[in-house]
Length: 277
Length: 163
Image 1 (spheres, each protein chain N blue to C red):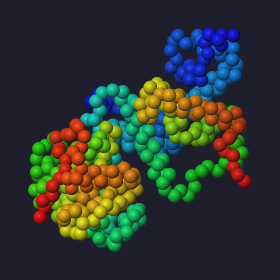
Image 2 (cartoon, helix red, strand yellow; image 1 turned 120 degrees about the vertical axis):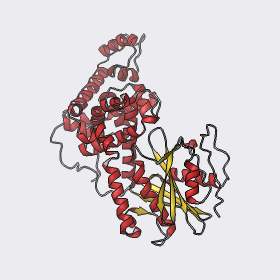
Image 3 (tube, rainbow over the protein chains, first blue to last red; image 1 turned 90 degrees about the vertical axis):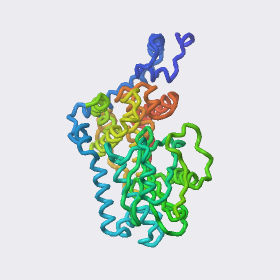
Image 4 (cartoon, rainbow over the protein chains, first blue to last red; image 1 turned 180 degrees about the vertical axis):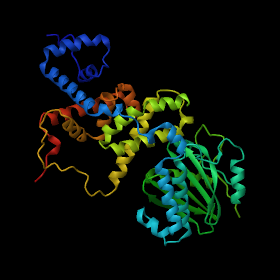
């Protein structure tokens, strides 16, 4: 009877159950339910579902929080057990010989074991896994320190310029110096607003120019390439298409082929130049 | 402790509850919560005010989505529950039944329903967490409720098996 003046939509029925209905529609919905038993039954069923869900899972929120989820202990440990596990795995494959360990959980590796272009990816992935879990010390020198790039350039013996990933909403956090197969290596870390992290690794690598190759290890992956006596690796979450976009952007920027990235360029100018020789 | 950290800490019980309902696995749920907290803590400098609760739920939801994706990519041996046994619990909305009903939902629908019903987020907040318009949240909610109702009413449409 009241249908004509106040038709009630399905959305409004849900909003009614969830307390999202504008106050001035409450009376109309109640009147509607009084005269539409089918809708009233559905609404009642939804409430029963909600009660069942709250009854089943609500108690979890009243349990004592286990100590490993306490903020203090997370901060104290500096990194969580996953990062420690990753570090142990990384150490194990470095010690145990690259080929054997990596063969187990790596896909798309076709080069011969011991190929230096593969090792660089593995070193980079090990560093990536180890440092992305860090809360307090993800980098050694922050992006705001003006000596970051000059310092690492000097140590690597080249004029480093970093890829700009701002088009992916990734901001440079900073970098660190690492031991590499052929001398010093530099690792730069980028981060977005969700805490996703990408690393860019660079080291001297006297090898033929090589195009992209993808390596995956558990839920992280790397893409490496070699240009002009330097090897480069971009590591991040194991999402091949997406990681490829990062690698391509970095490659093009380093080769000076890319147009300058759009707007909001950060203080860390991208792109490259490798006058390494 | 900074107020940021206190705010994060305050939300831990709710995050555990949501993760438990999403995964139905206590250990897995706590792993997800831990990863969420680690990310939140190390991204403290990226947080510029706003609803910390929605932000944390967003991180956890994304982590779980990534987890499911990487599971899906892997060849899996057996992840399906054996449905041959008759439901001993009967069609009432008992604890076990609501769990099974939730399992039938696709992930996006399950998230939307749990965030609204269990966590009390507003439609707008859920839209932010899921990164979709409010209308999409509402249709996910509607589909979730219709499916659960059908299951609890005994229709079990999704469990049809070919013998």
